[in-house]
View 1 (cartoon, rainbow, N blue to C red):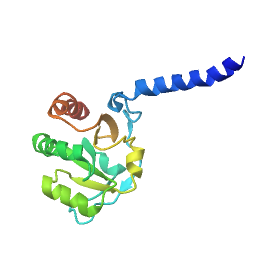
View 2 (tube, rainbow, N blue to C red):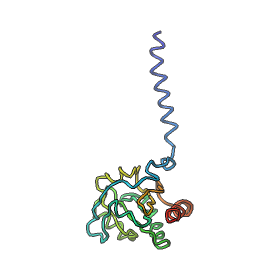
View 3 (tube, rainbow, N blue to C red):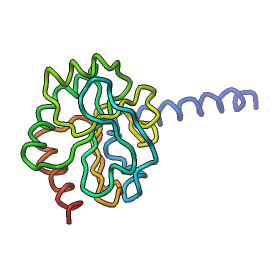
View 4 (cartoon, helix red, strand yellow):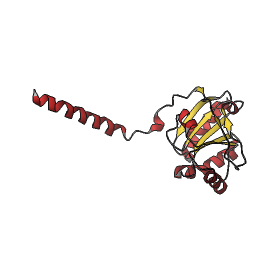
Length: 177
């Protein structure tokens, strides 16, 4: 009886460790967002001061297909994917909005001055409230929102040439039709 009382917590601890160990290597990008096929959350973000493009809100997502990219100047993968966003804008002419997460305005301005600013609007999400409402795990993340303001696609992590060709461009085309 005493052995059972000692062994039970030990077995439970081993089971918990096994569960956590097997889930550590799972890609969060493979989990379908609960926001897919739902309206974009209600929000309003001010512009990044002195950037030269406006902030945006939920209503501004309606009317045409919009790609929304969550980025930050301190994010190394954001820097890696940024040339693809510039190319996306040039290639497709899609409306591109940025959510600048947890960033000082001067750092956001310097980042976009150095790498180019493909965004039609950039909202300053200094407290990450909007990102949380959008279900953002971390930066970068990219969404496609259709003309009715419905989120139709989410990509977690940096875009690559392959993901742009096989996932993002088809998602934009699907949202346009």
